[in-house]
Image (cartoon, rainbow, N blue to C red; front, side, top):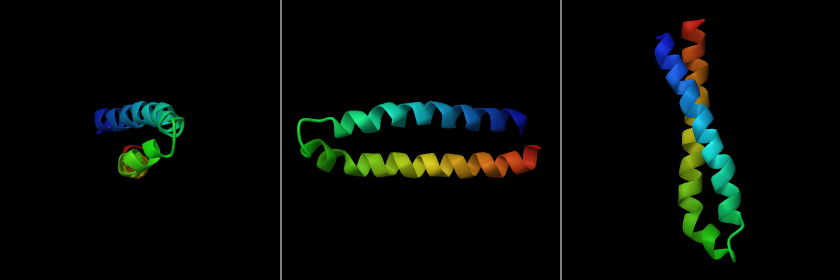
Length: 64
């Protein structure tokens, strides 16, 4: 269980870095066209991030 917890925390960390770099890149596009094209991907990424946050909390309550 401890290994699973470490993997989920590591996944959250890496995914946070990806979102921290990816979202500003989308908004710095030449126009709002990049936002319209990538809106669904951004919302899916944010949803997965929230899922990982809740998963870390749930697993943390079991491990500790």
